[in-house]
Amino acid sequence: MNTPDTDTQLDRSNEQNESGAPAHSDGAPESPRPVVKRRYHALLALGGLAAVLLAIGVMPRLEAKRALTDQVAAQRALPVSIVTPKPAPASSELLLPGSVMPYADASIYARTSGYVTHWYTDIGAKVKAGETLAVIETPELDAQLRQARADEATAQANYAYANTTAQRWHELLKTQSVAPQDADAKTSDMEAKRSILASAQANVARLSELVSYEKVTAPFDGVVTARNVDIGSLVTAGGAPGLATMPGELFHVEQTSTLRVYIDVPQNDASEVKPGTSVYLTTQQYPGRRFDAKVARSADAIDPVSRTLRVEVDVDNAGGALLPGAYAQVHLQLDSANPALELPVSALLFRPDGVTVALAGADNTVQLKTVTIGRDFGTYVEIATGLTTTDRVINNPGDSIVTGEPITVEAPAPGAAVASK
Image (cartoon, rainbow, N blue to C red; front, side):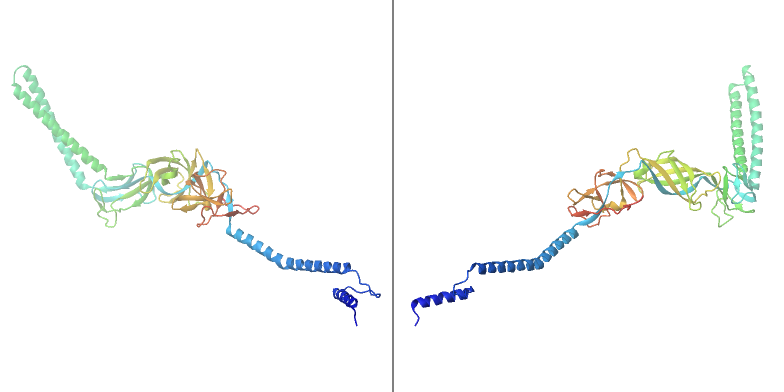
């Protein structure tokens, strides 16, 4: 039988065996410190393994989430390119279409009626002022002139007789040989005869002038551009009814040694165009050739319909290179006393409240500003008001851009230009 002491020893032995502590051969129990240390190291190993596994599984997800957040933020910010306003040139060229016209243009009509007996010049002929273009035969007018001259001779004779008679009666009146009333009657008859003579002389002068129109002459030096008569054609004063298809003029003469070119200058540039402004012409038939000209005069009034200023440009055409009626491009050299800033047209927004530009603010957000356009340089325009040299203007802004929209400024590529003039 086991005694109580023996049972107590067995229970302690069992507890030591359950705790894993080996017993010595002599029955003495092993120390518990190495066992606790091994358990501590095992727990540390398990914790490290868990941390490694957590880092492997969680960190990539966190990194991916952060990258996604950055990408979304970058996509929300609009990428833009920036241009800086620069001073506009003081001198600019204004290109306008122009119509070349002769310096003088005349339609030659008949001033007397008759038949054309001869014509001397055809189209393209260069004529001098007073040169005969055609001759009209007017037998009825010649007869009227002869009759008028005969009437003039009769009136001259009657006046001479009445004048002599009146002088005689005045001499007799001095000696009281005739009555004063009779002397006055002779004087009055002399005055009447003188008036009849003046009327006859005026009629002769009128008919002589009409007879002189039998010769159709050139009014100035120029070129005949139209001939609408032929030998035997019946012409009347002011028309040519003998030729049913003709417009009524006998000849058309144009002065081409100097030509006029009319242009319509826009209202914005009208104040810069004055007589003497430098200008030259170019035409399609003479590529690369420039024809020097000058502004001769302007209407000094804006057309209320087109809002333009009518300007005349005179060009020397002694060589005859330019032809009247041709189309030409007129290059005006305009000088501005106070040039403003310029921007490429690609930076402009056309909104209901006016022309607008988008600016990049200091906080990288969009700021819209209304501006006023001055001169037009083609790919560039002058900004008269609304900008400073320190403004950062967004180039090629979208139509949907609004104030406060976040942006990112893109660096220009090396050697790349935003726009070219």
